[in-house]
Image (cartoon, rainbow, N blue to C red):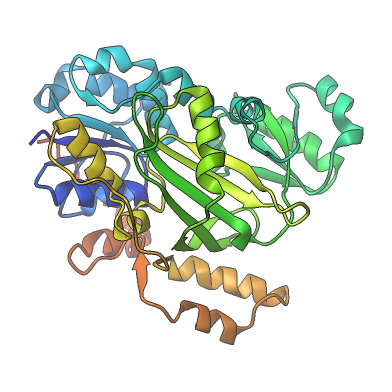
Length: 394
């Protein structure tokens, strides 16, 4: 069985490594120590550090296309982060000479990497979006000033560039001065930005659709889930999820995917607008999502599906999945509960009642406990200077 190489990611990389590793294939992780996936019994970590001013994606490309990675020739390369997608777009032809790559139409992947291009394509496809504005200069910002609504989200067009330098995915502005400062902060990182209306309503109105698209952009499976809570509230990542069936999402998402001719993995996040009841597009990803372990636990093992598809292994069609399964990050969800309690939106008793269910965890498995242990002991290992010493190249 050919090995698999996973580019970047955090909890999603760990989930993909476990699911492919259980098939019997060797799994290699190209990531930093803080990803924790390299501590899994199913994975081997390779550290490739960017040098001479190169970004991480280029450093990975240099390694994969250089002599040091010759022993990995024939491996399947999968991305769990935007930098990895960028690599697969820019170096697809060269990589395809050495490795097995999933189905893709690079222009579509590039469109979904760019937040403005995503929203523009959604409008063309007739998919509802929040109101949005372009602000690439002070003149453009001044021109749209009177039409802005607050709170307003300032999103970098290429979120991985902004997040890589600031640790943030977006900025929320409450007034025009905040917007002006946020735009300057985003532009300073080397990417343009998009101003987006914050869809009103609590976080539990957020939901997602997952699928896999064939060469004709036809969906081969359907999966939906919803958010119960996220942290920080109204702007953070999900800390409590639940599998569900939201029937409106497949048609909306596939309108966009078909319009841009997307192939391979696809995920779209929506939020139901309490003002008109419409599901508004928030963002899209053409890669494995952070909640992949929940998707797999429900019966939609995307990593195994892709691996089997690329290697020609037999597999049954995925026609159903378990609903009501939950994915929980206890620490971050407790913080979310405290914040909601301070706002008068949730009592401690209500929070406790909401978590009294069988849970799936992002990192912990009894059969593979080391990634969770590595996550818990990260501060101590940083103090002892042990970070980055688990390089395994062969």
